[in-house]
Image 1: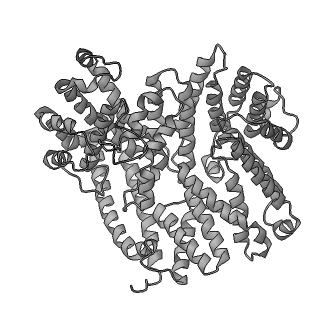
Image 2 (image 1 turned 180 degrees about the vertical axis):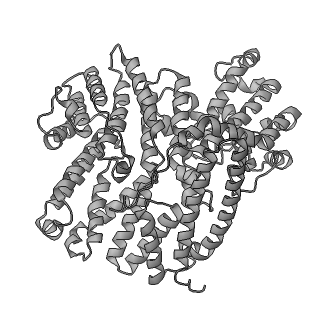
Image 3 (image 1 turned 135 degrees about the vertical axis):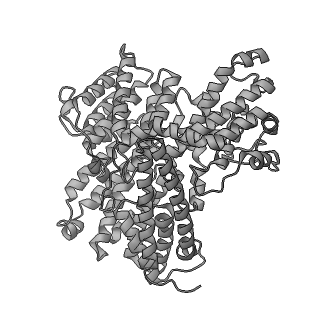
Length: 636
């Protein structure tokens, strides 16, 4: 293979980023379209642009990127450095791409390590850690921690390294490896405490301070890291043991905090004080809730999201709003709460959360925001008093922030209700013994209840995609193997999001099983047994509806060659050699003319009307604020 001409990689990276910006601008124009005719025009523009961009990207990726990521071609030093400079520029601008940053960085790390270029390896590994850390799913976050810890492990060589830029990455990698990422138990808490204590010793080293004391305030960094550790220790459902509580009280909490002055404290100190005293049994859960609510109400500082992007974990205004709210919901769900106004406190916090959410702009780095939103909703749902409200919270907060998933879920719901309706008419026995349907007469009398249930299943089936929205919204190139792997985790992500909530048991089977084959031998997740699940009929319906919408989508999936429902897709479903779909359902659909016509309309000429209604009803009002772009944030 010929040597790649110098500058071509840079030219492609620049054009790729320009195209990504233009795609966002077109989507903004689509959202803000003044009437239907303008909206249709913008939709056509979006489709044409994404198709042409997809073709351009695949051509350039095939000649400039894939040869290296697929190991068809080895890197040389000049090419590696050109990749490095472009990825560094993207990282500085808080831009992340699973292919152009993450996968190329994996190759750069291997190359620089093999070449013995230690400082370039440290910088590349740090950027790789950031690219993983920008995602909100646990799999990517664990990879980020591994990368950060590899760089932090170079601290013994700190004073031997010539460049401050490199030494700074070692410091920041240790800091990020202590950040809060849902510690599950006290063993993990104690491990994090050990990391912090080792970092503290490093920051107090005389040789380190002599070398770089003029470049960074080590005492201030230590104070910030203390806050990061506290948040890591308390944001968990598990109760702390005595060792953790004693360490928190002795080493982390400042002296002088009392119930009387708690409203004047920072968010981290106030929440930690309440948390420690609750689990040390110094006051009851009711008192903990009252103190936390009073603190929240006493602090109404506006959130500066540009500052939040710089460091959301230590931004006091953000933590007073978001983390205090999360802990309010967590405490309210405790079984020992006996407050008479428990319900009114819950609805007060729901109202507050809605206000925060509707004013929250889309940021240039949305991973931590999506993570916090999902975390807050999960905690909220544990106390929610009504199923309808719970579903409303999910749709308002999680799905609305992920427009492609929202649109797809509503489309799947419309198709699934058509299928369910004809099944109730043609074979009501399919629904016996599910949702208290003891006989055929009861199945038919509960038609609307069953239709409502399948529609809700559709709205919830893809909620796990909230953790991989950066992948779902990627329409300008083919997805990588790593991205496909993460997409296949979304049923598990969705199930975990609802775990411990009041609606989990009712909808978990459909969420977890909608990508399993009808015969149970294929699909994912492998460990889920859909064959013996009591909700299997609903899993089968959503699986078919999901397939129909995805395969016929000409608007939301502009990079694919869509199929017509009749005859190609219907025939494909029927000729199902891998037993992915329930053939009894497929045959009933195909043999019912009215059902086929209804599905044909929704998936073809009616799709545009449905999309327009969804944009107007659910999405437009959420996009009044421009996306906030911040330069030189994560790389600092």
